[in-house]
Length: 249
Ligand code: 13P
Image (cartoon, rainbow, N blue to C red; front, side):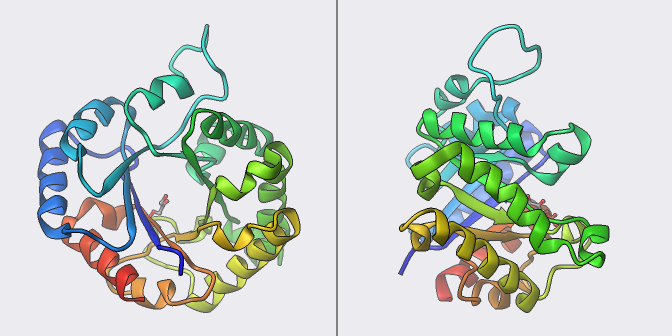
């Protein structure tokens, strides 16, 4: 059975002092987990977190990556720069980037390609807004978002992680039900199966108000291979509880 992946997305939170406390707490409670664990931290804390996590079972990730390699792109962070910090993952296409920074499906697909080109695993986020769900467009939206990534990445698509994050569930405390999430995950799995014979090994994460209470039920679904955790990843005990739920599924 494939290992589940529990990835924390710290978003724009943290401080040098708070990060150290959080990571030390996680490391002391973690042991040798039989699932994959990662934290995706703000760029400015990559060096600090790389040091704190060295030799540990927690992998490091970024929350974004430039779709350019180098040059006059003020404020952007190049794939090769991220690689220097020992990154395993880069989130691409988070709905907050799509919404507040105008990232298109094509830009997200290119970012996934750049991450793969540097040996990192992109965590590709897809998900519908509340109005899209209410209009019955959930499948159409997530399939369109994933299709762009499949199109740009060819056979490498089997190396990505996909995170289904319904926008209406992010930071709202209103998680998708296990049935709602499983339904969309099955749609995504079928789409991936049509693109690669290795679709079964692609990890499909759920994200959106996953917490210490609802994680077990979500993670028990057949096509939910892990979680992308926002708020609950900032509380060491909650994050550890979600990891324990992933291990016991
Ligand atoms: P919350 O867990 O805070 O809802 O955030 C989910 C998310 O956006 C992870 O990328």
